[in-house]
Length: 318
Length: 105
Image (cartoon, rainbow over all chains, first blue to last red; front, side, top):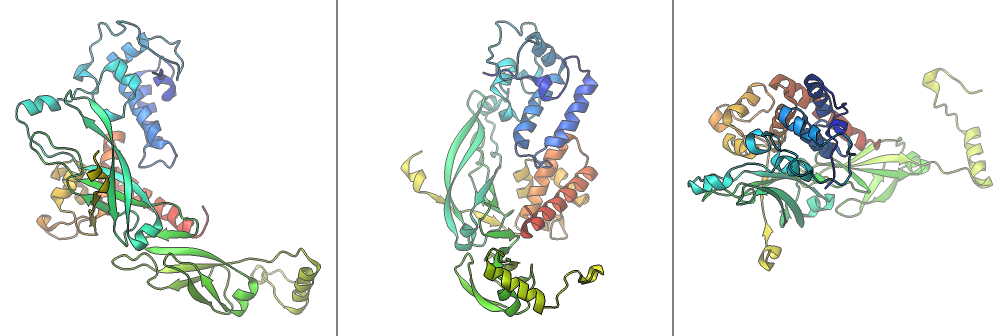
């Protein structure tokens, strides 16, 4: 088990005051809150912070933690000294707040496990519907275009008969309905947390998100493709084969198309209840002037075309 | 897990724009109806249907309500603050999504 330096996690010195601890928590909580933060490991950092605050804000837990001494380093292999917590009393038998399943082994070793009394309730004939659970799942764009069956793995904290929280892993085969979009939910009745006594199980809510796709970008139900074209294709117009998630299509590029022009294929986006559109965004690729022949063509354009892209800037040809 | 589980395919219900009742939303968030009603009063979430018995919530409301719950519990933000934060977060996300469609990632 690794030692956790709660002061370091909160960026505090060991003699920090109660107010300083509270202020540091508020500031870091805003920074790492998973709903607000875009930092990659925000969720893990937020949990770690919550655990540190749980200990340092509580005078009894803090005193017990301080008792371990200041010589420990974060990550160092740790075993609590015998009887280290003698004389301390932790109200609420461990966790007083926060997410019971989220705290580290280090915390549990020091302050005990959650004192939820699920087992007691059952003895007295307590029946309750289980809680609904939530998970976000990532699917490929193609899954929404064609519909699919995907195997997902879930880890859920569950209470055992002793009232301890254990993380349970399970996997489910899920039908992905055609046309589903990011942010939509699939509800699976009875797949949430088990109920207490003879209470029903809760439901499982799966929020859909798309994996990044090498070709396409998705906005709501619309799908975008960047299509590289040559300057002459854009200028003169042509017909080009273009990939879409439902197979290749022939796309007509109108003459005098400009860089960034969007060409719409109506109804070829996500096959939702109201189908989205497919957009081709033209990206004009410039041929390199790396041969005598290419240079000569550019030189010829320079001589033959009266073209000034800087007209609006009031700057003229030399 | 037995082989039966391995073969079993679960078909869920897709939550469309107007499919969650007040009771279902309360259960999904693990909160009392009073709290959801206060979110509606602050227009943090907007149900379809005039009468409270006819209220229907979208999947987006579910996401917002759960975010609101976490912001209140973890950061001590009040409802007006939550409304502001969620609107700004959503605006930021739609700008990010828009940037992505322009290829500036």
